[in-house]
Image (tube, rainbow, N blue to C red; front, top):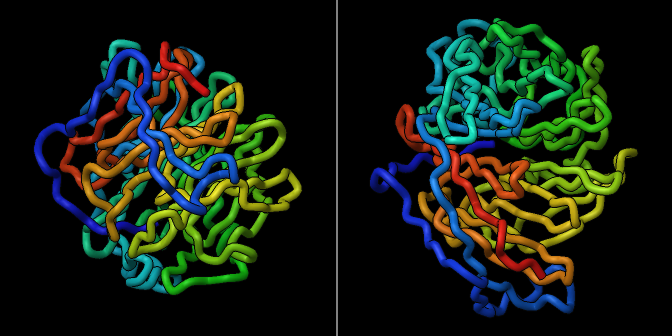
Length: 381
């Protein structure tokens, strides 16, 4: 995934807070609706508040078995130039290359119920693209039992020889062991359709655990991968083969199937992102259309979908127009939160509320936030 840089407008974002029952405003969306019965989008703003701050480009986030929230942070970028260390694996300027990386500076933070952040480790990779506009590194986190795993954007083509693009286990003392070298596997098994921004070691964006296996969304080449704890990698589906260069990003799992949302390419076209249903054997269909720049996807226990849109009504990412849409059981859609800036990921908490990585890029050191979207005590169709 590549984005365009922007400056932060003010020290804190403004979010609309409405209390009591949701107020709904009908908007005509034409053929963007989920079904013929849902030809309008409802506006239903719920309270959103700052939960935690002090992050460096926060990305994927998950609650751990200890009840704390764990946040992947891409860091602040490195200085090791890829051309100097692996000229045979260069990413083109269209893909943001050549990159500069560092084996340290990528971070995982732990946040307690009071919103207090502490560092689990900051000895993970961080990478910056060629023009300095976008930083990558630790992309996501996940747990198997009490074991913490991190998904990394790394590898030689990104200026990091000490870590592969892949998955590492992070031990309680902050040290790590490599679980899966996905980047090397991707070099040997490229997808069918290769765009001008092709990255040989891929762009690992998000992951989740199903039956003690890692399911990883790779954004650049466009695929869903499965990796075991023993390091075996296989492709569930080459999304690019049937859908083209759509830049898949977000994933969740519900009733035996995976659901994946895509970011799309730039300039942004409103309504051009979709949610795809993917079966375990790799069959893919479009489940819902008409979204924009999807970067988070959560399905609650009753089957309602929450879709995090990074930017709407702009050709390029900008501060302020991020929002969350809920797809209800009857097919209608609610915009439940607006005013987010550079949101990059979303998770459901054990309290039934959503938690969003905000200012996931574009800010200075420590500008990243986690916002709490309060769903409790608000009606759901």
